[in-house]
Length: 165
Image (cartoon, rainbow, N blue to C red; front, side, top):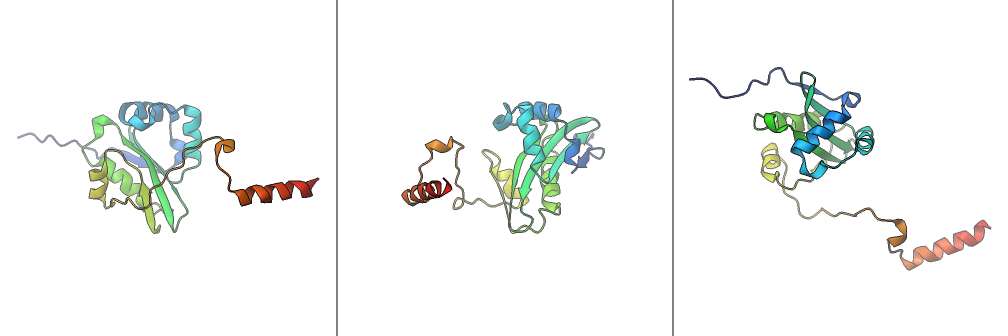
């Protein structure tokens, strides 16, 4: 009987963010990441540059996986944009990708690691993540002039302006 398991021994993981191929990342997002299909290359370059660690997964010259994180190195970190090419899903590469991010020196001592997911809760629970409804809040970016400013902040700002003249 022939085994149907895929052989991934040749797959390489890389934590050098300078090796990220933005064009291949866009293609990967379009194929496998509904939340990131429309991201432009300029914005992806900024996101990658401001993330550490960044881990890519390679089959030869083809980038087939990606994940990035932001971390203070001790208290809090967040994992972002975990994606594996659809042809490679189901063989343990996503798990290894997340574990590679978590074992990075900026991540391995962090007290709490957060991530957001829409449909993959069960996948992340198998890796050790827990559902947490008590700490999630979001602020959607909006023009500063549309944000409410508490009255005491307005008074402080007005008095600061009068001293600057």
